[in-house]
Image (cartoon, rainbow, N blue to C red; front, side, top):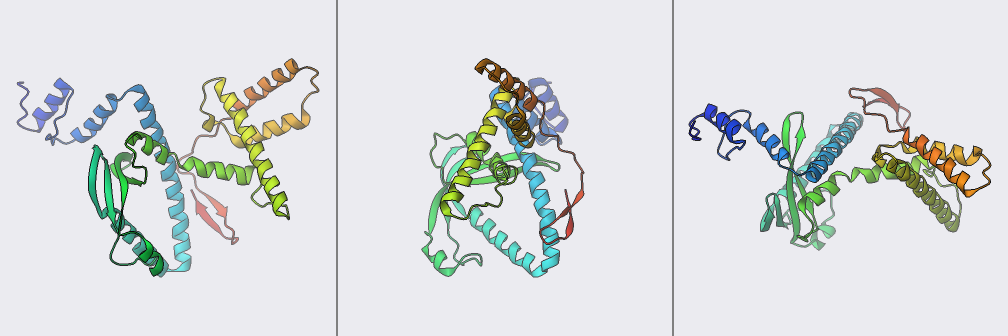
Amino acid sequence: FDDIAKDTLDEWIYYLKNNKIEDDFKAKGLSQARELLDYDKLSDKEKQAYDRVLESRRGERDAFYTARIEGRAEGEAIGVEKGRTKGRKEGLRNVALNAHRVEKRIAEGDEIARIEKQKKCPDYISREEWNNLPKDMLLRRISYKYPTKEGMETAVLYTTLLSERIEKTEIILKYTTRWDIEICIREVKILMDINVLQAKTSDMLEKEFSTSLIAYNLVQHLIYRAAQKSDFPPKKISFANALRLITQFCLTGKNVSSITGLLAEIEKLLTKILKHPIPKHKPNRHYLRKTKKGKYQKYA
């Protein structure tokens, strides 16, 4: 074989011989092989970042699937017309995002783009607000691929972070892990029992909220210390179980007469916290959940 690909079979032979895929190769299956080849060329740090992106995308897909089920049930109850209105809004947003002009290319899939305002005012914004918006604005437009069951799909991310010192991979990683913020808010509101504040004055409300945040950060600090004992990711440790163990330790702890004894008891507590990781996600799990209106609907 003289490294000249004359047909699709030669393209596969060229790839197996040279561990390289040319851009003009069109043989079936080479696109998937190219993605695997690009992954193998990454450094260990880049592979870890890429794996974290994939894990975050799976969490996002679960959240999107749940939202889609809930939205479908709500749409059936409210009516088809509301769904059509929402669809028109989303369509207008997509048109606005795609109407861009490249001002500068930073790297592959990373560019500074100018977004122009539509001529027609969308339904989801008032005419006054629309007129006050600038005619155009500069945004950083980043495109990247992520795996799905149907294959690789392309996502486009817009941000106001125009500094070229911030790398594309760093922005993508921060964006794909943004769901952690929602998890933290849920932990503070539900698990710290401040979903409904009990105080009656503004000063007491501030104290109640601040005290709960301090307690939340203390729990997270102990989770982090427990994770350091075995290089276990802190996000993989159950916050609810850690809070339960810490509360039990504070209420029923043994009388310790020395600092050394107290530190030894804390080390035992950290070991117990480490034994309670978050349960793995069970696929295809369906059960009924009671909504605020008292009705039950399917929840995945």
